[in-house]
Image (cartoon, rainbow, N blue to C red; front, side, top):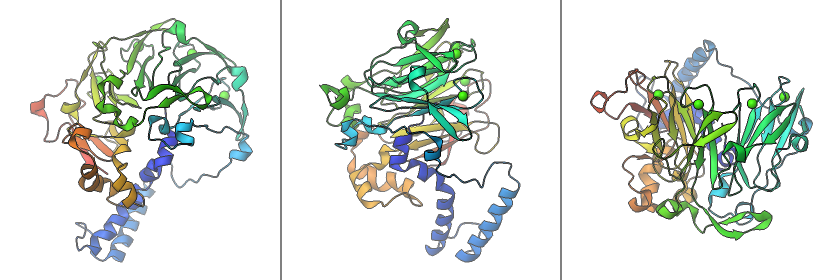
Length: 435
Ligand SMILES: [Ca+2]
Ligand SMILES: [Ca+2]
Ligand SMILES: [Ca+2]
Ligand SMILES: [Ca+2]
């Protein structure tokens, strides 16, 4: 699973997510000032906050969740000297282009000593694999492992055991350098098998999902492709210089690039599935899976950075059918990250989606000092439609302009996929909050 860390940090998405409990509390205080007290709570802000503090401490006392931890920056002591190097479109020219979404990181115990090792991805200068020595120390084993890829502009990485031999193999996506699959040969050594395996696609690839879509015990592979956001001109380090405005690329069908589903055939071979099995082409950087309808087959949710997300229901491991409208009456418009998790412990996986492009209007950037209570909601109401036309948004009536938390309703996980008639108003997914 990839994390577009650079992007999230650049745009404050991490901070925004972590700030939510604080934001909710602050919103309560603002409510009183606006003469709109929250139902069931005292109107006096000081009394209400004290009550909320007691309630939250009581709730925390009965939680088993790991909390009250702190982090200390121990990078220097760790020995890790990796530095991410960006192409000039980003690092020098600050160009609005998909290169600015940064790169990923992947973690696995590559040498079987019980300690998780770390693979860092860079656009320029090569990736680095750091072996965990224990006690917070690491050593750079990139060269002996053979996973540097110094001549490629890399994007994301994922570890997965593609051959069921018990060790973590490595897949890396690139921008027009060809995607790469390394077989783990044990002892921290890898062998590139991209071409023989049939996964050496050359394009504008991004997020990686390993999942067994047909339940045959072999991990299959879904690769998100963004769209053709580069020109034929080369820049420093050999990267393909980006087009003038990639964030309008979704309006140009000729730039569309289909994402790829590969079936694992065994013996370290994959076969690309035709559009009849899964047909997805959007400006997608990431995806994730969960068995949403409880039929035993993993379903797939694919983000779109410039338009509607898409949800595909797995048809018995044979193919995927787009059921977005049936399950999600609205999706974020500019989505970057997602996580299936059971936020309310009811046994059903819910879905949280982070959105970035929706807060990138010039007006919003110049007006907002940062995330604050209610700011996600304000995006849709005040900013987006002022600056962006319906033509640019390609129809906004089914979009959320901000992060979204979807609660999976009872009945969704029934063995039989519910029909439209059975849905509650608003669809099977219930927006707990467009945060
Ligand atoms: Ca290890
Ligand atoms: Ca393996
Ligand atoms: Ca499979
Ligand atoms: Ca399913």
